[in-house]
Each structure stands twice: as structure tokens, then as C-alpha cells.
Image (cartoon, rainbow, N blue to C red; front, side, top):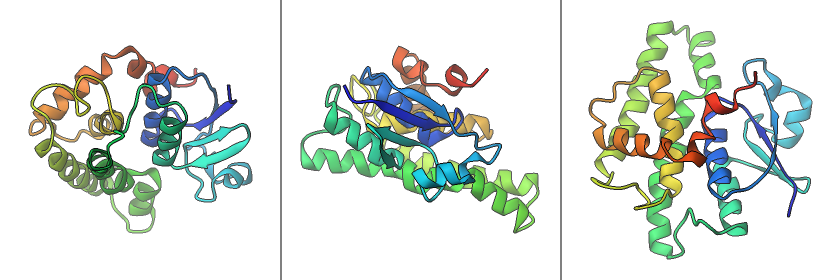
Length: 210
């Protein structure tokens, strides 16, 4: 069994995705906190792991993989059960496309460094940052809602990559008080997913340092 070390932050949505994937696959790993609130991501030690200074980073026998999607893709190839991405090329493309709505179109716009730039460089006040978050998180989640299944999960009867990305994004939506009334299918799916023990064990509150 390879030695897995996850450089993590408890409230990072991207790290949350990776924790879910690893727990669903029943993997064991060592977690090292990179305290984003304290700025540890900008230190030389972490920059050596990921020049962008972001989490998560997964070390596999000492070799670092950055970016949550790359990490999850590696995990799914290395430990294929339960499968998070379909084997069929067209089905895989559809799942990746929906997951990328969150990974590429929604999540980057809520990042701490974006919020800091809005405040520090553009002079946005609390209300302005809130408007920004509600606009972009709300629009992206509404697009996913339109494509969400009426019954079951995005993965049918078991979570897939879309589901893994949805849970952290809904956590962020609640954290930033994004209105959820127009997202009934996503709310239902998120509630069902958070009841799964492996996903509950991945939640920020479950891993927050004491």
C-alpha cells in the first residue's frame, strides 16, 4: 500500500472533495494542515509542493499531485472501486463536464484570494463581496440544478464525481448565505449525500483541528 499524505485545510472546498473521494474508497492517509487563514500556503515549504500555493496536495510515496480533479482522477485509476468516473468515454465526458461547472466556473470565484482581492485591491465592502458570491455561486448552482436528476444522486444509486463536487459547494453556499430556494433538487441530493457515513466523516466540522 502506498503512503498517502494529504496537505489539507479543513474548510477548503477543493480539499473537501478529495477527502470525500478517499473516504468513499476506504483509503487511509496522513493529513497535514496547511493553515490558509494564517497564510501558510504562501510559505516556501508549501510553495515547493504547489507553486500556486493552493490546497489540496496529495503526496504518494513522496511524489506530489496538485489540483483536486487530478488527485481524484489518479485515485480513481489507482483504486477503481467504487468507481467515481464512468469507464464509457461519452458517459465520462458528461460527468466531467458537469463536475467542471463547479470546479472551474463556480468554486474559483469564491476563493479566499479572490475575496481578499475584492476587498484589498478593489475596495469592495462586505455587502459588495456578498453580492459577488451570491451572483456567481447562485448562477452556477442554478445551471447544475437544471441538469440535476429528479430522483437519486447524480451517480444514480451511488456517488460519482459530480456528487463529490456538489457537497462542498453546497457547504459553501450555506456558509455564504446563498439563497437555496430555487435549488430543490440540489438540496435533496446534498442532504442524501451528507447522510452517507464516508461523506459525513469528510465534513469540515469532522476534520477541523481542535
